[in-house]
Structure formats: C-alpha cells, structure tokens
Length: 360
Image (cartoon, rainbow, N blue to C red; front, side, top):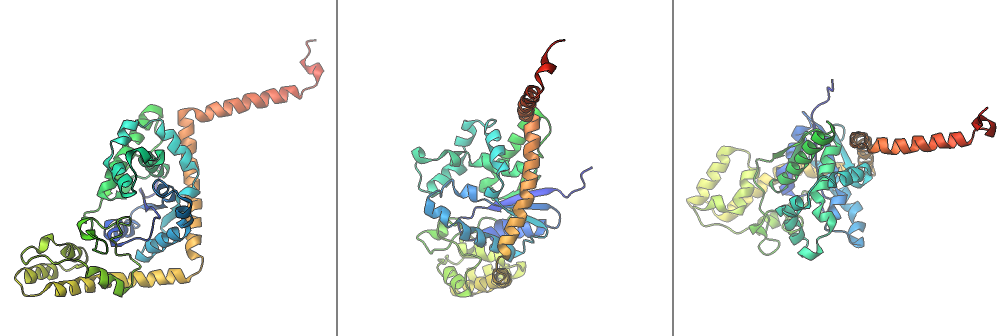
C-alpha cells in the first residue's frame, strides 16, 4: 500500500515578484500544509507565455523565476519538504497536456470567465487570444494530474480550473482505467486583498501584478508605508468597507485589538492616519522576518538555482512515470512498441544467412 502523504500542487506564474495578496491568499497555507502533505510547487513559466510571449518578456524570465522562488523561501517554504520546480523543465507535461486536449471540448474552455479576464488584463481582443491562453486550463490540468495531486490550493478565480482538472481526471479514468488521482481545490478563507493607489483606482481592484497596485514582499519599510498611505479614508461608521481596514483584518492577529480599532475610528476617537500607523506596524511584524530570510537566501550565491534544479529533477521523474501510465492506458505505448517489435523482428530476419530461409 502507498504510505506517502497526500500530495498537493500549487504555484505561481513568474511574471514578477510576489505580493501581500499572495501571502495571505496561498503562501501562508503552503507553509502550514508542508506538515501534512507532500508539496509540489510549480514555477509556471509556460503559463506566463500565454500572455507574455515576446522575446524581451521571455528574456526577463530568469530574474522573475529567481524572485518568485526567493519570495517562496522567504515566507517559510522549505525545499527539504516541498519540491519547487520549473514547469518548462518538465517536458513530459507537454505530452500529457496534448493528450488531455483531445478530451476537452473547446466550448468548455471558451466559456471560462477567467480566460476572458486574463485576455483583458493582457490587452488582448477576442481575435488576438492565442491558442495557448485558451488551453491554459488544460495545461494547468496536466500540471495537477502529472503530480497526481489530491489537493490544489488556489485563489477563488482559479477554482474553476481545478474543477476542469477534476472532470478530466474522472473522464480519463472512466474511459481508460484508473491512472489519475482526482484533485480537489481548496480556497483561502482570507478574502482577496485590495490593491493600493499607486495607480489610479488601484484600491478599487484586488491586488495583482498586472494591475500595478501591489505591495511586494521584498518592498522596503519605507516603500510599504508609502503605499499604505495612498489608501483613502472612509467616513466614520463605514470602516468595514474601507480597503485599509481589509489590511487591518488580514494582519492584526488580535481580535480584540482589531475590534477596538474599528470602534475607535467609527466613533471618531482616532483619525485615519492613526489607523494607517497601526496597519503599517502590523505589516512590519509580518514582513521583518520575511525580509531577513530573503536576504539570507539571496546572499548564498547559486543556492536558489540549486533548489530549482533539484526540485525539477524530482518533478521530471514523477512526470515521466505518469506519462508512461497515460500512454499505457490509452494504448499508445502498445502501438509504438508493436511497431518497434515488428521492425526489429524483420531486421533480424534479414540478417539470417540465405540458406536458412530456403525450404529443404
């Protein structure tokens, strides 16, 4: 019997460093889940190509990959317990994705709002959406099913992608035999953090890389404070609606302190600047150890690259094992091996002396 821990897969696109929204949305849960799960964490550079495929954008990938991995390590992801790997370094996933595409209706993909949102954020009109972006959820399914992950932590906007991976796994297993674990999504209970007003209307949208309204995990204390102070203040009595108080709810751990902060502001006992100060103080309690760990990993030259390479080698072994099972189940391996066997037999027959082929 397989005694391994249940397996988990999650990850990030290396389109820039990670931010506070990632921290409360998925990173903190990854650190906790290392205790109970075998964690595969993907640096999804192929997924980044769906909206950033220009040569100059690809040239920035090495720095982005390093930034993302340093951010993961800085929050406490342990490479001794989690397999951190580069998606493009696992070619078997490409093969699995192609085979899964054969089982996925186009209508199912084109109806996904997440694809339309990604295209809009990338400035792509309907006529310009590449096939890779339309098939993004299938490649994501290949990532999940390659690892036979039972659990997939995601943001709410990506839950539908895990549902697709689940449906593909069930369909494949029913059609060809039991190969894939059937994954389930888990969505963070923490609501998405709002952005900051470093761009017009930034606080009206969730924090994201593409929107330019993020507080990065690697930001300095001065930069964090500057960005927090861009947030507007609500009228007294409306604190629960304010973006700044969403930060307070995410980072002030003491429930009584948080309740008092709301009450003091709503009755006019403190001003908005005082609330900003308390939020900045709470943020720094979280970010100081993260910055320290990041600096330690960054100072160890080439350590980050070693972690990625080691993890990718592990992921490659798992992926090729899964691909072999997929090909066997579908009959593709028998097709190929049958052709090879027939060809080898014919070649061996031709090498026999002439007299052995004559009837006596």
